Image (tube, rainbow over all chains, first blue to last red):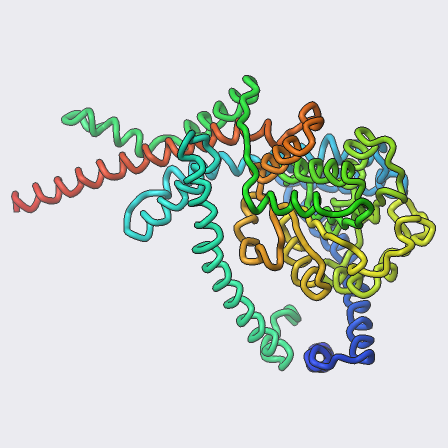
Length: 206
Length: 300
């Protein structure tokens, strides 16, 4: 029964909202908006669940794994500080402790982590961009041209820019469109399987 | 090292270079241009110029919805775009409605308001010229709801004022009340969701700015569904250049993207250099392997 009820809800909602999409009327619009409100409510209710899940997992890590206790402690401490300093509406105004922590701790930390990507990309490019085959040579050539747009090349800069523009808006776009259409068709197939109860992994394990 | 052939040994060493050496080169490639304040001039490409021209063509008082759909990790890349767009919008006397689909976007709105609007355009009045609508959960669901009814989701602004008490919100009904939607970020939810759930169904022009890694994914929507796009630091630098060209007074203001183009350019030169070296060593190594195989065949 625990699995049957969600499956029936998904079946009914799935069929109703597929039909609703093709009926242009006020009643149909009302059903859609009502459904959207429910999506918002469910989304918001998922937030405390996420917080509980994070706290529980981090706490258990701290208790069971002595080597990771310090990091779990830092994580919980950071969570508590940001939550406590951000409780009031005024804390979101510039100059508050919460905003100072956000600007001078969180932004530099995350931006630094993200910037490390440059070093790894350089190292990976050195090892991976090799003209081993025709396809690899094409990839190498394309990457080379796209990278060169950032380098001042004097009189050939305009030509390179035009070439990069063409690469991005013709072959890149064609490939991306193909991918998007493929993903769209795949999503439709998966949705049908979910609505009919064939695909049940979203329910988790029993 | 091959003692019989020291030249080949050198190439082998280069081919198997320690990645820390590459990291060191990239580090210097970034630090030295920063110390020397090296920067490059930029010309706006059509995809960036389209965003500039759209804002430039909007009449005074037009309503622009700016969605802050990014987090702290991409601040160095996306914030310069926001700064330039806010300056441009302020200069054009457009009404700026700022909101966020990302939780962290709320804080970034407050920062942008303080650093750009309040500092550089002190005559602008909160609630009349600009408003912070804050963050709301719901991702694309939120866009779907505000497409038909904005005030259903936004009953107050981020400061807690009743939404109808905010003068510039009085005549806002839904997304169709806006003349332009700008989504800044490139992740999920972001530009793609604004195009699919806001711009297309409501027939509202959508433009945006995205990180360099996510910009190519958005090209399929340009130019019909996405009228323009600022891609990475380069896109931001191009927009800053266009803004300085149109409004020379902004030359004295900060232009972080143009400043960042120097280190980025040198770092790319270093990467290109390493790729070339990598391929040279690869071909020499392959030629040597083929030679060895041939010699082995003869001995057999």
